[in-house]
Structures are given as structure tokens and as C-alpha cells.
Length: 310
Image (tube, rainbow, N blue to C red):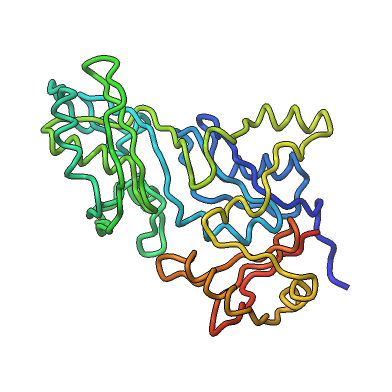
């Protein structure tokens, strides 16, 4: 017999509003312990100095994490002018100072150059690996190294606040892999200024946003009231942009056994009309229960990820 997994078979998503100065791994551990869940993971790291949306997957929801890694994100951040740091945030060592304070008009005029598909070099203080070591470890050790630029997409960027001449607030909507600190660094260079990110909040990751987010304090209170599951979102939350198909009990059984099912021509045409971007992925449901993620091929649905939900 195999060893019984520790914890309970809890399945679903927690849209956590991560507090300041807490790492993503620590946040996942705290949520997993609150639910006494067997398995947990997160969709997209959020730095300790950032607050906001950290989607945490429990149990079978971890099988949908790859879909969230592709999701669009919304960030609201504040640049403090006058000082640049080696980490481009308020924790780093100061490397330059300047009296230049770009106007709101100047920032707005510079932003369009950073919208669309652009080349962006990650900050030296990042989790990217260089010859097997994290870049931030090398940077702290004073090692000389270069990070390659990468193609990323910023869909929207706008100035959303300017409380005083020393600060400007910007909100962006991005694809995957965008570094807010790199954008702040490059924007400062374009404006002939020095600056760093002094505040950062992630407001949205795909279907997860501040509207359906919960705090750790709120979750803890739910646990004490034996109502933890009120803070849990369905496993299918991460699949909101994937076409759905209701299947019969017989077809659901076949899919759970790893066997493909044959579709009617009208079902094939309906699914094809709803698929986009070359995707073939379809989610199947038995009533309200997610059964499997499948690939549509030659009039059949072939199970790719099967969910053990009841």
C-alpha cells in the first residue's frame, strides 16, 4: 500500500490578497495549513515588497496552474523620482541621484514606447537562473553577469496618479513575463531621470481580481468559524476562457478512464467556433462537476488532464 498523503483532499482556488513583506512560498504554506490541504501551489510569484493578487491552487486545482501562467495581469505601481537603486525597488542600495522630476505630461508622452510587443531586460535582482544560480544571489555577491532581453507584451499603460512631484503612479495590463521594475528603470532612462519602484500592487491575474480576493485574516476567521470553504473558488475558475462541453455520465466515465469520446458533428462545429488562437483545449463537465481537460482532434475529445472531483 502507498503512504497516505498528509492533510485533506481540498480542491479549489484561493484568490489571496497577499500582504506586504510576505513571500509567495510563505503565503502558499499558510493557506495550505489553514485548509489542511494535501497539495498546494501558486500561479505567478509576487515579490515580498508587492501586495495584491496571488492565486493559490489547492488539490486538483494545481492541474490548472499552467493556464493561469498565460493569463493577463494588471499592476498598479508608484515610481519615486530622484533616486535609483541596484534592485530598482526601495530595498536596494542607492546607485544614483538626480534632481530631475519628470512632469505628468512627460511620463504620458513616454509611455506609448513601452506599449505592445517590446524587448525587456529583467532586473539583475530577479529569480532568473544564470549558470544554475539565481540572478539575485549573483547580484548580492557582486558578480559580473548579463541577462538577455526577452520579448514581452504590455497591452495598456497609463498614468493613474501623481500625489506630488516626487512620485507618479502607473497602471499597466500585461502578458506573461513582464517585470514592473524593468519598466520603471527603462522609463526613467527614457526621461533622463533616476527612479525606483516604491510601491507595487497586482490587481488582477486572469479571472482573479480584487473583487473576489480574500485576506489571510479573513480566511483565518472563516477557519475559526468552521466555514473555510466559503473562501474557496471552484477548480474551473482558472478555465473561464476555455470552451465548455456538457457530457453524459457514460462519456464522463470514459474520460475519467483516459479514453477519448466521439462527438456529434454539431458539437464539433460549435466547439471549433468557440476555440481561438489555435487552441484545441476543451473543458468537459458532468453537471456542475469538472471532468477533464481535453484536446479536440478529428471529431473526438482526447483527455489530457483528468480531475478527481465529486
